[in-house]
Image (cartoon, rainbow, N blue to C red; front, side):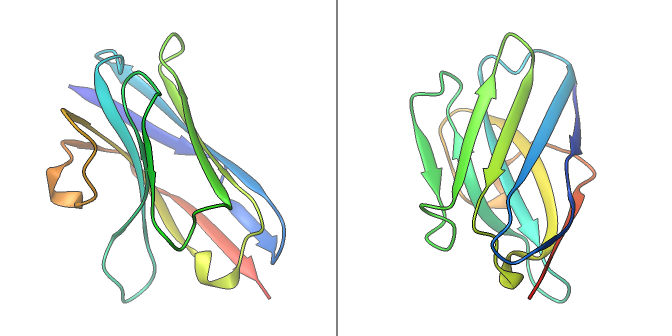
Length: 123
């Protein structure tokens, strides 16, 4: 079992930055892909970014490419999502998730999820 807890969300203005963190407990994250998803009201959960267990491979949704950066520290069992140049359309609950194997963008392929952290970007 892996328990994930997100933090760092908040209310910001368009153009601002936020850094989300995901802290894992239970089993080590060392061999698992870590990803961030988000879900806005009335919309389906969507893929944001993912990083391989080694950190060598990353994947981003087109909507965040160039603005968001995913990273991880396996020694600390944590992951981060640096979000720059935030836009109102980035407003959503952001979830951290992990899975074993390769990077995938479908939420159903992820085994463990955090409770989410709210990010609200005002215009």
